[in-house]
Image (cartoon, rainbow, N blue to C red; front, side, top):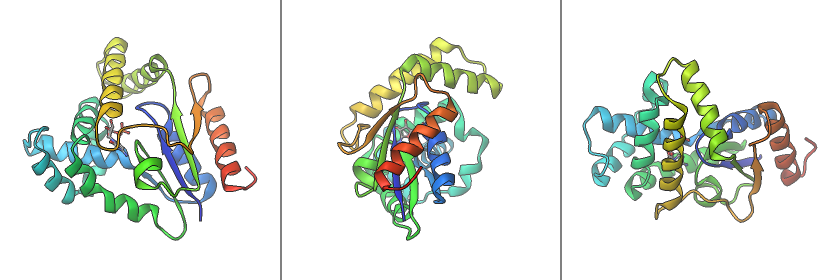
Length: 211
Ligand code: C5P
C-alpha cells in the first residue's frame, strides 16, 4: 500500500503530479490545500477576521466539505486567504486528524500540500518536493487564470506568488520545506507529461517498483 507525499510551493505543478500519481499507483488523492481553502472561504463568508486563530480553528473543526465544489474555491483571493488562515496553529491542528486518517487508509494514498512529508505523513514511502522558478510558476498560474476569464496581470500574479512563498516558508508552525528524505523535482523546464513521467520514476524507485 503505497503512501506518497507531494509537497511544494504554489503553482509548482504538484497538484497535477499528485493526481497523476494517484491514477498510476491506483491510490486515492487528497489535495490538502483545498481544505485550507475551504476554511478560508468559510471565514470570508462568515466575516471571521483572518487574524482570529481561535474562531478560525473552530471553523476548521466544523469543516464544511460541500465547499470543495464551490466555484470560488480556486479564486486568487481564496488562495491568499488560505495562506493567511493556514499560519494559525489552531487551524493546522483541527485539520490534522482528517489528513492523517486519509493517509492511513489501508490501500495507500497520495496527499499533496506543504507539510505532508514533514508533519502529516513523515512515514510516507515516497516523498517528492516539487518546485519551479517563481517566474515560471507565475506564468503558468497567469495563463490558468486568464483561461478561467479572470482579469489579472502577470506581474500581479508573480507578486502574489512571491508573497505566498514568503508566508508559507516563514511561518513558525509546519513551514513549507523539503523533507530530508524527499526527492527534489524541479519542473521549470519540463512540460506536464515529462514532469509526470519523472515523478513516476522517482516514486517507483523509492517504492522499489517498476515505473
Ligand atoms: O495548494 P494551495 O495553493 O491550494 O494551498 C493554499 C494555501 O494553503 C497555501 O498557500 C498554504 O498556505 C496552505 N497549505 C498549507 N498546508 C498544506 C496545504 C496548503 O499550509 N498542507
